[in-house]
Length: 115
Image (cartoon, rainbow, N blue to C red; front, side, top):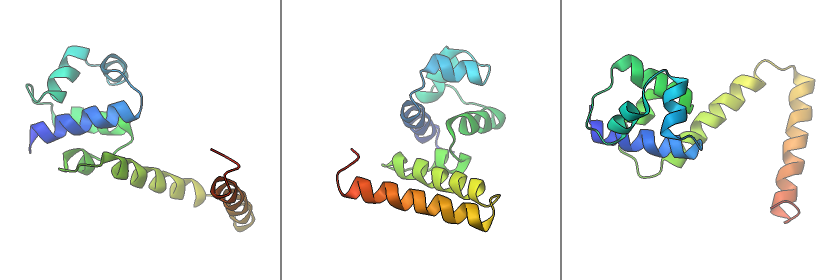
């Protein structure tokens, strides 16, 4: 495991979620100093801590460990997965309605009505 990559990805994902080190630490019951050490790769987190961080940041553990330049794509994939999970509990009529609403929103964005 490359702890430098892990630390960089934790930091990027944390910032994407608009979380401070203090808030992330609070959510997973750690000290902010330890989060700082993880992000700088000066301390090695337990596997349990890595799982807690991933869960809190809404990102997979695998994605936290990947050497990627664009963590936004990772977060996007997680959001798509979350959307799929939400939709699969809905009935056909509800899904049709949701799709219609989403299409309408996307058309408005494309036409410049929503920025």
